[in-house]
Length: 475
Image (cartoon, rainbow, N blue to C red; front, top):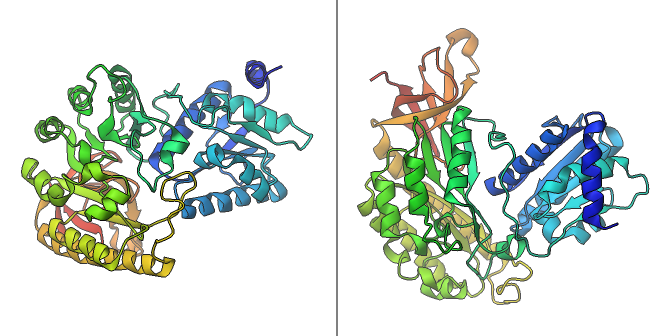
């Protein structure tokens, strides 16, 4: 009997068993979280009890990231912690999913022999059967369900409204895989080529999400701006945004993970004229120096990078820009780094993250040997982030006294709340992405009737590092 036949036969019998509780550990980016929501829907529909605390769960599902070495180390540590609960808690099985299981399944079992099963990115719908097999297995042999070396599937959740963010916002994956081949990035090898969902499918899911009271939809993909390029029917991100912007209600749409060379005039015009789309773009530039961009195989961004921030601000006044930079890439000299430092000082980004080069197996940059040592790379990252912090302070000082709209997420009690009775709300402006990516907004004097998901008006009265301090304003 084939593996798939076994999985199908097991799936048919699952509803006859008593509910098994599943605890989730979600690592990595929001794209990974969406995969977990897909698996959560499969498990829930089959009768499992999902979202249970891992300390008391029958099965622990660790959904992993493998983007860089730091992410892999975090994943292994989380897997080992889950395996320890097999010895000390109620856990009967540990299942590993996500990018690490897709790419390093053999290494997982070598490093963590207590793992019961690994699941590949093309096999998410098999998670109920895998869980049952892991619970029933007594021979100690691990279960491997990684059916394809390079994923080709594109999933839609059986329960679009199953949101695991814990707040009034959701992530909506519009495409999977990537059409670029950046020299440092292993994602195309792990996730496969670009695969876009249809506009009708995305809009239908957005409607289901909004119907549950979600007030912010974050569109995600490996490169959201490439959406539709593989469909060959003139589907574009601009066309999708028009459809989403036409939906009724009071909500935000945010675009995450764009590519500098894919920002068309049509796309920018749609963002500028929309009523729901946040004037916010996340466009990782990675570097500014032409030599390094060519070495990164990102030469197609050479034309757009030099004036990218100022150009976007001219087209969309008030737009908030986030970017990411990679330092320590092989061949990066002090001159190259100083070029990047001068560039971010001149163009300026509202939010900027930086990471150091990590050699990834299977990428063109893996065998390059002329990369700066770890100490130099980390020093450059620190210098870059210190400069960015200075730029942010200057920007935020100018924001003090202005008014903005805030999406409330959760009340946060002050230490002296018993004496003052004051409750501060944590929320975000349209210029702050979820999950503390860009900092948050703390709002005082919010009406007692306020609820998570409410939009309110507030005045910015101060800031602490990257967070805004606000006061509620009724008008």
